Each structure stands twice: as C-alpha cells, then as structure tokens.
Image (cartoon, rainbow, N blue to C red):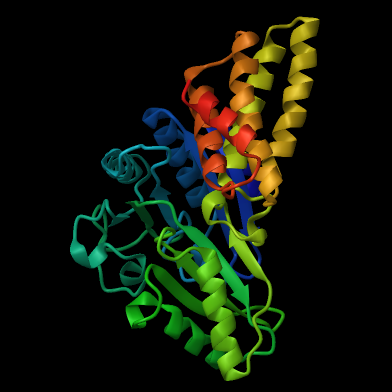
Length: 358
C-alpha cells in the first residue's frame, strides 16, 4: 500500500512522469525516479511524495540494512539534457523550505545544495552529530529528517559476493572507495542480506571517469587476488545508456524518458475521442512498453534512438506534440545515440544525426 500510494502521488501532477519504481526487501528502500521539464510541477510532486512517506512510514518500526535518517530519506534533484546544476540547487532549496514550513519535517541540504561543507556528503549526515539546516535540532519522532540535494547523475550499483564473509566484503568495499584511496567517484559499503549473502552497494558519482564497467573489472580483479568470487551485478533505479552494462537492460534512463513521452502522447490521442485517436493511442502504448524495456544490444540502442526521434514526428503529425514531450524525446534520442558503438550502420547513424539537428 505504501509503494502504491507513493507512485500514485508522483503520477498525479500534470507534466511529471514517473519513470521507475524500484524496491528492495533487504535494504527496505524504494527508489522513485521522476522526470519533468517544469520546476513547479516537480516541486509539487516531490513534496507530495515526501508527505506520503512521512504519513505512512514509521522509522521506529522500520528495519533494513541500508543506513537512513528519514522516511523520505534522500531527495536528489538531478539535471538532465543540459539543465544547469544551479537550477537544481534553487529547486532543491525551495523544496527544503516547503518541506519544513508545510510538513514540519527537518531538512538537511547536501551535494551542490549544501549550506555547510561538513554536510555536503550524505555519509557525514548519516554519521550523526550534525543538526538539520531547517528545523531541529530534534528530528521528527516517526519520520526523521529529509536529505534534499542537487547533484549530477549517478548510478546506484550493486555486486554480490557469493561465499564471502561480511568482513571480506567490507575490505573490498574499503579498497574500492575513493575516500580510502580507491577508484575516483566510487562510494561503497558492504551489507549482509537476509539470505546470508553479502553485497557491495555502491554509488558511482563520476560516470565519465568511472562507469560501472570499470568498477566491475576492479571488483573481479580484487576477488581473483583474494580468492573470492564476484557474483551478479545489479543497477538500482535507472542508468544512462552511455554508462550501462548488461545489468541495466530494461532499466535505461533514455528508454524510460521516451516511454514516458509516448505514454503521454497516447493519453492525448485518446482524449481526442475519435477512432483514429484511439487506434494511434494503442500503438503509442505498445511503443511505450517496448521502449521502457529497451535492451543493451548495440542494434537496440540505435533502434531506440531512431524510434525516439521518429515519435517527435508522429506526435506532431497527430497534433498532440507538446514542448515537454518533445524535450523528453530529444533527450532520449541523444542519450541513446551517444551509446551507439562507432562503426555501426554508418548510414543510419548519419541519418539520425541529421534528424537530431532539426
């Protein structure tokens, strides 16, 4: 019921798209990924999600292996497709003000939105000893506090270590962490799951320097050196196509952006009320489902980019193309195009590049 209420709240604001809902029993956390082209709508949706979480989750009864400070634990505002990070900072701080003034929940600002250097990292906030930036010093008795920030896109990335002890996994996590002299942009912890397995849980915060592929190579190398085994990898939430490994199949950010635009177009076509509109709506819904589960094969990435670009023309011809959906589709097409390997179908790629300049 909690998951359904949070997802419904995110969907209820016009112009805000729920791209993904990803829960995990061991961590006992839910990651909602929203996208919008207008800040006020996104503010309203995020505030509604925070309110629902505070109303329905009691931290005094909550159990899970992942550290947390609140029911609505972390709310990052992330720039996409050329949006300035400064705009995300402004939105995050306004969301924090409303969260405290309207909901009475204390707020920590982190990342680029941090007001204090010592609070810029979530790990520092979770370690305790810091007072909230808004509200406090005591936290809400059942809902805790909310960490609201602005940051570039990251990937939440897990790797299982079958047969390893928690102590062994903790050593691998320590060796990977940038703060311990490991890989640039890697934050890592080790957790023991309910079924006895141990997991490396990581945030990769500089995807250009250290994408998941390089992290997995490092994990496998460390395991080989210490007699451990590197197990399956997992992406939590969504991953940009250019940084993705096969574990991100069906969880590509750009595929979900294109799917959201196609679904919005389907709603607009159905609202026309005519037979042609209903038929096109059904086709767009099918397209949205396929784009949502887009795979990682090079052919699939190129086809996905072409389909996103073509949808702009389809929606325009149907007279239902709105600026918000056009921007989602353009961002999806550009992101998928960037992930297409060099040398693949040069004629098709050249045609796509010409489309994306229009």
